[in-house]
Image (spheres, rainbow, N blue to C red):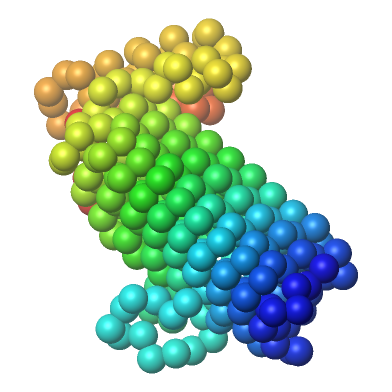
Length: 257
């Protein structure tokens, strides 16, 4: 049902069962999938695609042009995955041509109030962005990551899968997969054991990650030397440890320690 006060461009592609609340504005290049619910006073603009059963709460701004002085228009877009929830006053922006052209937020995510997802961010699935989290441009967030409220993430940083970041942190380097980090500037607190336990990881996997974290982060020595030691260990056969080592090898900003 579309409320009579909503302003919906006739060119927008909207599934039949979509709900759009009072005074919301839907632009011509917006696609809204089945089962979506758009609350009151929402603005959806730009080349924005919402998957199935997405919920957008009041005063959210989704698909606005990026806050980038170099941006001069172009065929850039924003993609929101199935069943993602976008809460009050969140802002999610289009990508830029220089940054790959697309800002992507995956499926089953919770984007809480006042969150900002800047241009060209790549957010995975089942991620929690708590209240007032700010992702600068080109940030990557892995699946199942949780970022605490009022945390700011510097542009081009990566947050690994199943990482946990405490509230009011400032992230200026990459946060490894399965890690727990917090602070301004953030430092590593170790393995995210609570998150891994809740997710049902096997004890063998958690123990292997603990030993790998100790070798990689708790001994002061060059990263290449630590990676070589872990690569030769029994833990190297675990897919999670392989993922961790690949993340570290590919880091360009450096990793929190």
